[in-house]
Length: 207
Ligand code: VGL
Ligand code: ZN
Picture 1 (tube, rainbow, N blue to C red):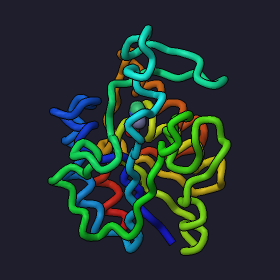
Picture 2: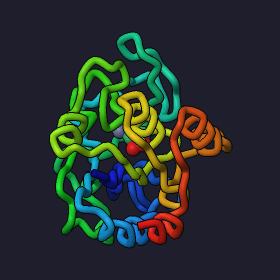
Picture 3: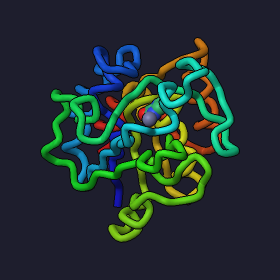
Picture 4: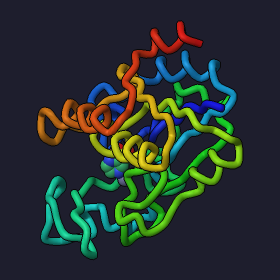
């Protein structure tokens, strides 16, 4: 079985949001075109409590973009984003959510960030995603969403390490690019680790 995973297509990661990814909204028509090809449509939500420690606002002497040590892990500090139940945490209104079969929430523990849809950044706890995929005998994953250099990359690398046949939709991802080449580097890291990068148009033809 195959599934599509829509990573963090939420208002705060789209233009106008608090952690807007440049062109983040351009991936939405690509997602909407691919969704009908799948019986299993999984969406992830970054889902932070108000006092999440990835927020620069929780660290009075630090700035957005600073890299700190958070309980033993490197942590980039972000603007407040995707706070549980706020409009910023909602799916973008243009995303066709009607066919979503499962939502995985991540980043709920205030003390640790979770870029991957499978594990927190310390690999201490799992989300419900691996169990969901196993219970539906899903082995082939097609991943798109935001952001290339954070949550997409971590989700893809963990999917590979868990043994999934993992595809990334090249035109269905956009990055934050704190450094200009971060997204390019992320795509290299994913493909070197075994991910197959494919254009959405190629994918639609292959089904
Ligand atoms: C993300 C930074 C902080 C992402 C989430 O979805 O890529 N990036 N939280
Ligand atoms: Zn976050």
